[in-house]
Image (cartoon, rainbow, N blue to C red; front, top):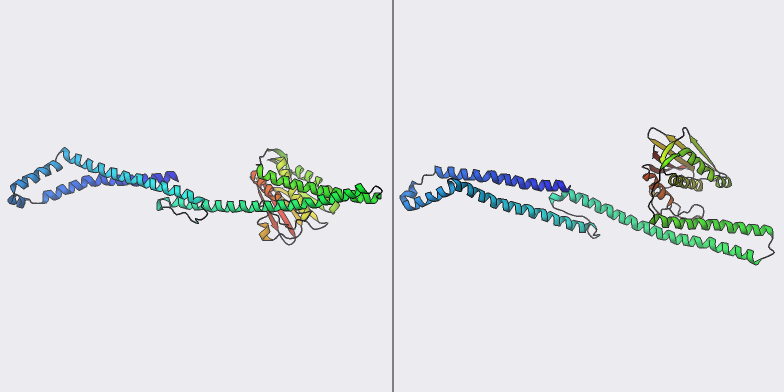
Length: 366
């Protein structure tokens, strides 16, 4: 873009230079012709001295080498004038660009205007301005969501912690408590400690996401086997909830990817499917591949996600469930991180939701 502008301005300068180079000799030839066509007898009759003096001047300016010298001097003067204007135009445009750069970050200016020669720059700068303002607004919203989430998590951490202290204090104070009641209180305290661990992990996720850049360490991996192993890890949870995962595939799929990062993606998606599915319902996972892509779909029967929430579901710190439910409320980072990991693998992740079921689709290149 910069080279095109420089070429265009230089081309204008060369065209002007070519025009004056052609016009100067043509003008002198035209003047010579006009003068030669005029009869100056009247001047001679009026004053022979004046006639001879003018004739000498004409011979001096329009005769021999002097003509070329005069034409060159005129050409040189015009060249200097045009070159000055050319440089002035360049510096004017540079000043306009410098001013535009300042306006790029000025929130009080809605639109950046530039001279016609910089129309393409004007279009691009306004595009960058809109994008930067959008990113700044998004960062502000993410920061606000993060702050709200930390407040929620701090409150949620206090609840199980207070409960644990209460039950453990009772166990410590009553020596002759019946065994059955002891076991009940120990189980409640243990459940609360697990919940506390989850909340602390969510806080660490937030801290890591702010400071850590995701770096892939790729290797050849069996995607079918990875998903099967993740499903096996959820077996105790599935058994307790009386739910089942049906995993179907036609071929074994080998891909080049980061096993830890992809494992995190599918763990998060399957965990969400379990948490948000109907009681005692089945979850379906399908794996298919074509020539260049492998497609994984994770389907659960459950409440429909509204369209306005579905559009934001992959945003940082966004939670479709805002109730801070103990089982489903998370940090709002899982799907955002999943999207980043899949896109780093040059893949795609998307979500669909109907009245009957919700589907998360992951596509990865082979």
